[in-house]
Structures are given as C-alpha cells and as structure tokens.
Image (cartoon, rainbow, N blue to C red):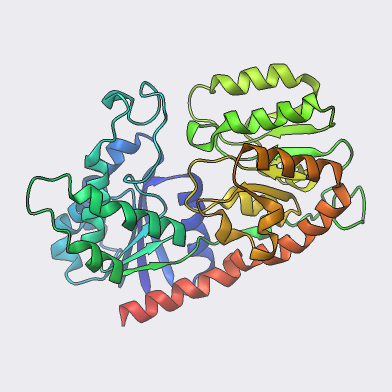
Length: 383
C-alpha cells in the first residue's frame, strides 16, 4: 500500500514521527513536507504549496493520504480533487490550536499580535480539517478528550448554524493511536560504562537532574526552577543538565537559574544526539512541570534510559506511567513536586530500582510495537 504523508511543519516530534513510520511500517510511505518555521503561514498557505507540488509530481499516486494537524486539509483536498478522487484521508493530531495553552502574558507567545486572545481561525482550520478527513487519529486519550470537551464551546461562539451536531460525527471517526519512539538510538553501544549496577551507565553523585523539554512558557520552567531552589535551600546536592530545544530568544528565567545555580549546571542548550544520550543515561531524575503535553516523547526517552520521572498528575502523563507508579511519580501541586524530588535525590537506590522497572513498561511505545498498530488501522480503514 502506498501512503502519502503530508507534513507542512516538518521538524521536531512531527519529523521524528514521520521518520519512524516510514522506517517501521510495512507500507510504502512517501513524504511531502515543508520546513518547520512560520507555523501560522504553514497553516494558511502550506496546503496550497504542497497541493501544487503533489499535482505536479506524477510519481505520487497514493492509496491513502495521511496529514498532520498543521495542514489545512480542506484546502489541500479541494486543490487536489481531480488527482485524488476518492482517496481516503487520515488526519493525525499531534496537537491542536483549540486547547493549546496560551501564556498569561499576552505580549508573549504565539498570540501576542492578538494581545493574548486566541486566534480562532487556526482552531477552525483544525475543525474543518477533521470534518474533511475520513479518519482522525489523536496521539493520546487526554488529547482526544480535552479537544472534544472544548469543541462545543468553540462552536457556540458563532452566531448561527454552529453545527453542534458535528461533534458526535467527529467523535465517531476519531481514534487514539500513540506516537512511536525510536528507543533503538538510545542503546549504549560504545558509551562509557561507569558501573554495572542496575544500569549500563551509573548515576555518579551528586545526582543529575535533566530538563529535556522545550525552553518555552507552556513547559512552565518557573515551577521547575522553584523546586530546584527548594532543594538548594535544603542543602540537597544535585547537578543539572538543561538540554531542551530553544526557539528564538532564551526565556529570562533560564538565564537567572543558570546564574544562580552556578557550578551545579553542567550542560546548557540543545544536545547533539550522542551527548543527549550520554546525559540521559547519566541522569538520575527527569522532571516535567508542563502546562501542555499532548503526548510526551522526551519524557519517554528519559524513562527508557532508566531515569526516574517526576511528572504532573494531569495532561497525558498518567497514560505513560503504569498505575502502580502513579503515587511515587505523579504530583498534584508544587508541594508534591518538591516532596517527590527530595525523595528521589535522597533515595537513589530506590529511585533507580523504580526507574529500571519503568524502562520495561515504556518499551511498549517502541516503534517496533507501535508501527503494526498503524498498519492495522490503516489497512482496516482503507478496506
């Protein structure tokens, strides 16, 4: 089966997902992409550019078209209708513009030109694309549930013909299908082995805490650094690696924390693959304080490297962690975060034992396990 994957904002997790599908699926995937910049223009004009390229490329004759949420699928389908005909359309929702959280500061973030007000046009692009698709896939149950909880309120904003009946229509053609993760790239190989106790790479004291998420407001770095300052005040030793991806100007909270924590900070900035792998295997703890997470690839990567996770008891995280570990790993408030971080830093043996077990649990998200589910769903849907 030939599948055309259309990705107008092709980078980061979107590109990793597409690459994983292409390498692990039994089917023949062709990619039609644009670079990951100017996200608003990608949602406006990306469909026109990619439709033009698709129509002009005679080698592309797909049995199924799969698109990401950044594509205006309605426009793409209209402009390619003579070539596509009745070809089935699948929309994969990595994220959405209806429930994506906005910063408290209206002068910053993606809607600063609207003074912090959500631009409903982008949410409508997602909605219309879902209406156009024959099948809609969400990357987590949390993502699906939160979207459909908000969708009726969104439609009620409109003065008439607000089409509330479409909510059930969309529910019926929506499923949950997790992102696969390429854990194979984290195999230690020639990575220096410092200990054979529990892990291919030991956690040398003081314990290393890793932040491997984006350096942006929706990841709530303020709460993360507040917890570290609490550990500092209590005299609990730790080291810190800040290796998430940065976009544009670095948020000031990072500069303040780097200066305050001084010698505790051993890495700052994006880490290349080998360095990133080394940091994850050396790390004792990974922490998320996110306000937004529809899935959580970076957290799964850290857990696979036997790093103990401390995560909010919200968003998609309860789906990633087995219920038996919820009490130890998931927190409800800042006090719970500090309590769990204190425990993990002062009980390294117990934390490591838990991390070893969690590695086995999250291996279920390996592409070798996830790709066959994509193939099955696409095959059943196409037939």
